[in-house]
Image (cartoon, rainbow, N blue to C red):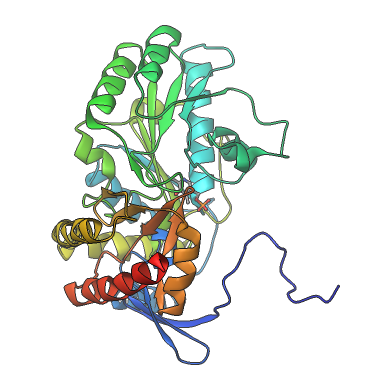
Length: 390
Ligand SMILES: *Cc1c(COP(=O)(O)O)cnc(C)c1O
């Protein structure tokens, strides 16, 4: 067989080689321009190569790249401070990805249960269609067989319950697991927002039964849904959240934030990461969070979201292929058949979008997206829908 790539075959890569990006656009190696409504999968939330983050990184490149967590890193401390001051959490742990942040959350929840509450073999409830990562622990936590298949034996101790379903509430009430871990908008699983009443009940049962609540904000965090974190829109305080994707504007960094009463289970030597929160990653994170908080990015997401949803609802009345438009902020799912084919047609129209689940087109424009760019999207998208009809 003729080898076409030296890379392992873990991704079905599109025939498009991206060479450059700025704001909401990317260019391929031949200079063709694409409107990018994927944001590197909810990662380049401030658009490509945002000046503020770039300048901070360039500056840091001259100072220090890495020194390990055996020493104090002021920028990492500053990033932890800005994240905890702008959330309900007390302390932060830094790592390099979403899966690693969830690994840390699983370890902390288990240690808290076993050491502080003397629970043997603590159980963690997660949900069907969830996505928590690709490492052994996080794929075991993920409620999707296609992600687990072939990798058995899975890590024990996870129970998968139906999302937005009252039977899950009964289970929590009757079984009192050590922790429950969930996304407030299931991203990869199909852009499914959690029902507000369901969450209210889930939270009240969890608080009454001393069940830790871990919210996976890897995709929903960093302003994606219109608040810094999605939990703010559900009026409760989780015990632990995880963040990654948008945190470093494309520079790899993950974080776990926790309340002190839980975090105290972690002591020196219980968990760690060589690279986690190194000076470069923390600089990218700090500049990103500072930019979001000091440039009214969250208000912008809310207003752009309102406009985009109303325009997409209009499309739905014209194109019956669109069964539903759902999501929060600028994490948007359009339910229709042949979503994968539509994404290919979109690419031919110089528009980059994603799928989620089986029949959902997922839109993740940068949080800085303008009205003109959304209009540009709508024009191309109408063309594509018309092509799909034929
Ligand atoms: C992407 C994602 C992850 C995994 O993050 P990686 O950085 O790819 O490890 C975990 N949870 C959610 C909700 C995600 O969207």
